[in-house]
Image 1 (cartoon, rainbow, N blue to C red):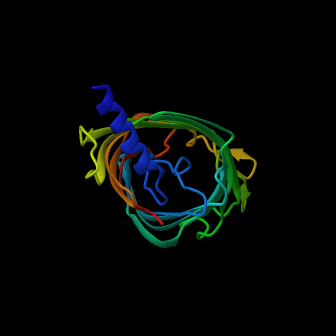
Image 2: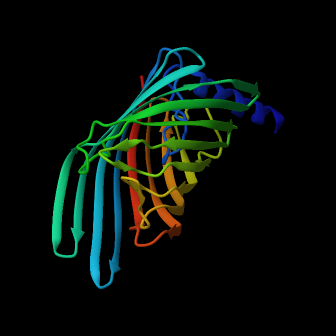
Image 3: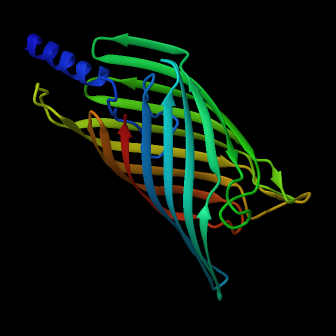
Amino acid sequence: MVKTSIQTVCLLGALMAAPGTAFAAPITFNTALPVSKGEFLARQQFIVTNLSDRLGGMKRDVTVRAGVSVLGYGVTPKLAVFGVAPLVNIDREIGTMNRNDTGLGDATVFARYEIYRKDRPGKTIRIAPFAGLTLPTGRTGKTGDGSTDGFAGLIFTAASTNWNFDSQIKYTVNRRAKGFARGDTISADASLQYRLSPNAITVSTHGFLYGVMEANLTQLQRDRLGGLINPDSGGTQAFLSPGLQYATRRWIAETALKIPVVNDLHGAALAPNYSLITSLRFNF
């Protein structure tokens, strides 16, 4: 029994240590994506989000379809840099008004630096701060906000041979553009990836199936237009996201359904119904 456990740890450790290995990782946030020194990581996500309600008998329905391209590079064993570029289609139906916009959304660049790492047989713990910018690459008022916004946060990761846990706290400062400033946000996210298959790891093991459960909590401050506060903005949102993830040494396929469990928004702010996320990730 002891010998089998040692073999399992060694085999999984060898797979995870191989260059270009695709590790299990969160689905709903990008900041904890693992990337080794001198390696690239590419993730292509497809996200469909629907928001709808009726306000005074007027139907409001918004569907956002996004193809999100993520590229990461390991500069050193501790430093990684990332770029995120979304291509979005937004379909708005507000009463009798219908509008559809397609184009590049606001891109994001950020860097992450590992400040703590403790490795033990079959286990690891890592802590890393990150900081970045959201750039006004989208069309203001259509596919983008028009402002250059900053964000920073801290990631905690713990992993064993059977599970991975990632969490982050993040603060975003949204600046003004053309008189409008979206409210700042603070968010906390957590992701647990638990190995469902195979039960036993052998030299012929080529991939791992993980069950994933993620939680996302966001506190939104109110938006401002000119010097006035928008009463139909701000509030608290919480989501649960069950998903599946299949990971091999070079690529990962994954999907998750992001479900709102708290939509405590102010005034007539439009609340989301769901987000469906599918993605592919490659390490090379």
